[in-house]
Image 1 (tube, helix red, strand yellow):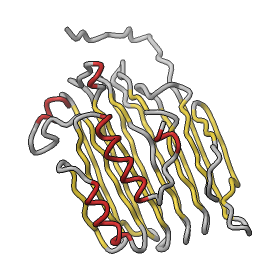
Image 2 (tube, one colour; image 1 turned 90 degrees about the vertical axis):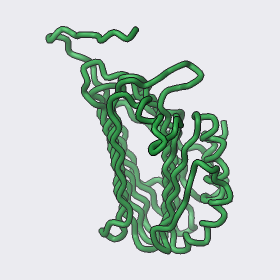
Image 3 (tube, one colour; image 1 turned 135 degrees about the horizontal axis):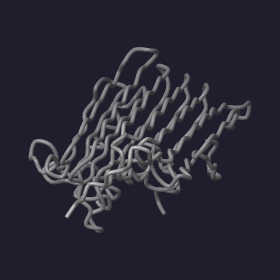
Image 4 (spheres, helix red, strand yellow; image 1 turned 60 degrees about the vertical axis):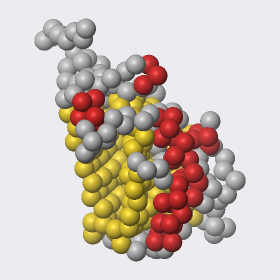
Length: 277
């Protein structure tokens, strides 16, 4: 039986804060190099070696997850001709908000002319009672390439976790030279397990992912992407340069099996190592 925990009014909960600012630049030898880095609070980043001339940034949250009232900000910039990939050390866990104050995660990415950025965090896992406001703002040059893959898991099925109460408020805004090309929003609250059972929403699926691929010839990837999708997914072109896919899966394991071939295709076989561990 679920019991609501009442905290004394005088209780002051500890909050995690994190700030990460990062920028990369292409040098005269066509090698992408880190030119600016600021780490603050609970956010850190490591840079594994890559076989190509890009920079791979692995984000670490030393707080161990996001709880109610936590606040994290990430800002990244890829200058002209640079290549940057982001991922996370592990799945990000969103824990129960004891005082019903949402945790917040805001990411801002800027990609200049002929540069590329891959935003490939591992799964975000919501626990019962979790409350999260998440926002991603991306500004692209007309000739930039950008890939976003954001997987979301509603409790760990193997652990018997079910979300009967929670809040997930997500906003994605992608602009090209300041003009919107992709706007998306998800708002789920209350008994998410019951909501996901609806045939019109998820038909019982407990994991989902949103994929956005922007490139000057993105249309050429549509057929190959569709060949990799299960019947619980779909892909379409918003325009000649922007491809979007939505994916539903029964659990995180099946979702990862679907996503790995997709990322291999859309990154030209440059999936971050963390995704393969």
